[in-house]
Amino acid sequence: MAEMKYATLYNGEAIPVLGLGTWDIGGGMSADRSRDAQAKQALRDAIEIGYTHFDTAEAYGGGHTEELVGEVLAGYHRESFFITTKVSPSHLRYRDVLRALEGSLKRLKMDYVDLYLIHWPNRQIPLEETFQALNQLVERGSVGYVGVSNFSVELLRQSQALSATPVLTNQVPYSVRDREYVQNGVLGYCQANGILLTAYSPLKRGVLSDPTVRRVAARHGATPAQVALSWLVRQTNVITIPKSSNRNRLAENYAALDLELTAEDMDSLDRAA
Ligand code: NAP
Image (cartoon, rainbow, N blue to C red; front, side):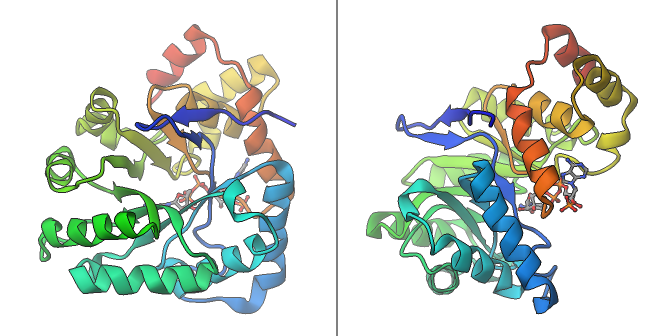
């Protein structure tokens, strides 16, 4: 089994660089209970393989994804896991944030989450109000760290100025085939300011059929997914959260941690987009 690698956080604690995404486990924008047995098996498989970092959101499966994660993880020691969930953009008023976390904790059957993110910005609601609630949750111990998602450099700066606790991460789309958040300066800003960039959708948008990815994979006897994930987590301050509900692909993605890309591989992948 591959050995997990960790990124060091601002307080010296560690976060697994590879987490499990859960979008579409238990439904998309609303609950789909028809595949619950399969979904729970996938989560158990992930834990057996070694995943300890899970990324979910109150919006996923209309709350049902959190329920499935909660049901499966309840059988294990809470402290062994790093759990991220997200507050929806319609819940960013002070009281709504507090209420949203309460709902998430109930569905997750947990008394705290490790990381709580603003899922998407909402320009109608002052960020000040949202961060006041988030920081209060940290003080109470219901949230370990706070962060944001889909934020520009401008919004990141505002967040940092407003938050009493450091902004741990900005979760954004980033892959060999998606450089939007490199081009808009977010990756550079995160690296210069000690903020983690959590890369979502690392395998989508034709990444797996990209010719450079495939060439590097063939050279290493690895799979395209392993190359795409290894390229991400070898970058400064970058971690990622691929989703799979298939045991073989969960194991395949986890084993990306063992793939040693050369400087030359990294260069050609950097230039691949
Ligand atoms: P992803 O992880 O890049 O791709 C998931 C898709 O790839 C699934 O269809 C999966 O199918 C397939 N797959 C996984 N491993 C594979 C492999 N080794 N070979 C071939 N196919 C493979 O995309 P994502 O789910 O959009 O992003 C990951 C996570 O990021 C999400 O689950 C969610 O937690 C988070 N996210 C956050 C936001 C946000 O706004 N903050 C937005 C999007 C996503 P199988 O399950 O059948 O393997």
